[in-house]
Length: 314
Image (cartoon, rainbow, N blue to C red):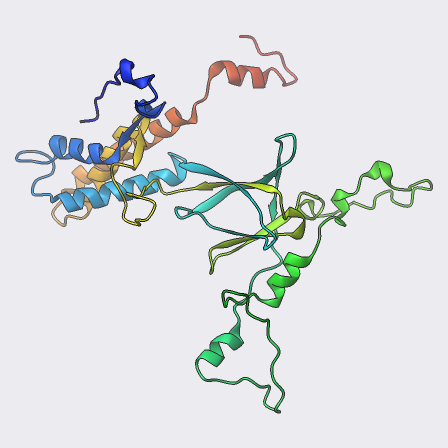
């Protein structure tokens, strides 16, 4: 019911639970605790089905995962020659995309905002029995399909083939011949996203893929992304498993208030003052959970402030 004690005799054994798992509580246990606390005769929620509680619990975890829980995951993968990386199965949005050099330093990749992978209109028209010529008898040119029968637009193919080694930001100014100062001011007004040599990427939202510039081929890319916190019962199943969906204990009460407000808001006869009170409690608990999970330490903050121009007494 949300109150557990780890067994120290099995925790440090290899056969025990995962290290650090005590910080979390399964969503299934939160649902059971909510049912025991809030549902029943003469309680705030009467005649509530288990399906309703489960639905609002999943929605609460999803909403809190985006901004409060910050349920981020890291993928490390070597980019193949195709320069394509498929999105993870639980991907919602990316936080940072970078590649790791030989020293373990992550070099940030920036999105290319002036390219895309346009939809092949001709492919669609042909599948509908439409035109294949330009009207004067000439066949329309199109990009050939790959081994899997997938088409890549000319725009995407040109982007994958281009190299970024000639970008202005990748040139070391110490190696440039500037004896007479011809290059003075040459970078004035340049867009920062175009003045770096780390590489670029763009996201094909339709096909669910990341496309990288050609200089990323063979490099180890680290993808940090946001998930919605909902696990799966097994690698071969797409059905959410409530036992695998973990909630930080620091945000447990916030989940309860989200579930409670969701149930009361769905009822047409819920009193207005009660809804207002629950909304206040939900906002307060969400704020509290965000502060707790921000993990701000006084000593670390003081160390940062000591780099300011004024002396910080401690």
